[in-house]
Length: 507
Image 1 (cartoon, rainbow, N blue to C red):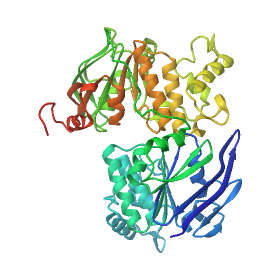
Image 2: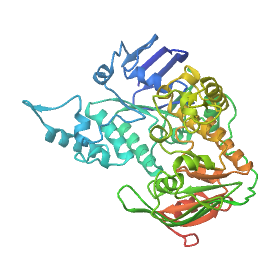
Image 3: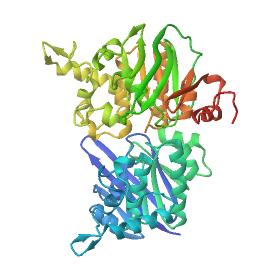
Image 4: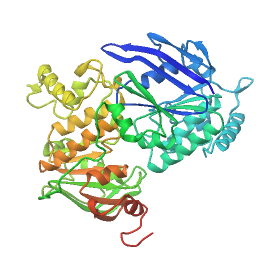
């Protein structure tokens, strides 16, 4: 078959960090090749080099056997290389067609020929089973659909070699299944794919071969069919990893959070949560399961003060907190790991140390008479970064934007747990994290519970909900379908409840 891409002995350094240290990757014609590694292992950097966004300091690249220098993404496009980035590059108020043709517009004289472009997009969409409406506006379509637009953007430019960077990080389980089908269709049509990921289940489902990198170095390339998940996890992390963190049975104490007939409207002024009641006690983890968009976001926003509840009560330690400001709720001891790390969790252009004190910068020892005390902030931040293994080029003074997504996530979790909240609301806490980091975060959540804290875990990952929670509340269309003890249920039963089937009704 021969290799369509060869990256040989690639080295790339940034200030304070060697991102790629002598990495070799070879992609065969017609294969799905997984690039596996921990957060910050250098996966995205390597693919950004192949796509022409960075230049390697050393090493060389061959495309279809011919050595080449990929000076910028336009050169990559000309070579038939396309890339879907982890954070999509789309213009919200443009249509699907306008986004796809950006930079390679068809013209009829001086006029843009969007009609012909839309027809071609429709044909490509049909051919690859993508179901995209060429006239829809980006801001009105789901995240999964936006990803398909990015795929169409590559196909429109006749890409033969497709790079997917963490493609499932922001998708629902159903969208992930759809994406797997799309990838297989692309291979049948003669494409070759590199997929950056750290989700072992997905590698087993679609990849032919897998190259593992750790801390910037190649560990090896394996045949996926003959390698188990445990072996790949060990190659990636460098030690034995437990997929299910052991925990003792919970010993619930007093009620910390009590929601009574809570009604909350969404941005479209429609009830997203109706008559929702739930209790979370000290010393237990309550998981909230549900397909995305069933009221989870509005529930969390109402508890944390980001959204006003329409009616009902939110009691915390026996006190109604619905009138308290966000800051007052934080001071009362409510911690929040938000679902969108970049929009809600961090100020991307601040340094890590500034982000670590966002909620407490005005308190002792971080400020005295209104003046920030940099040394106290630095040592506090250093402690969190060390404890949660947050990797960055320049430590606490690194600008957050420069960190990998997984390291941004670990920084937020460290900041919230360090505040030692009485109630920790963790929303998608392990989104975009590798198995080693997931194991660590799960241990820390269980540790919070064992210290007598209350934890509310909201996640789309069913294994996470089942493994970490003590009790599970299932949401469907903003209503509580039922509550079950995690030890007495399984993925199938929770899946049915998520679809609205009451427990005991059967399918």
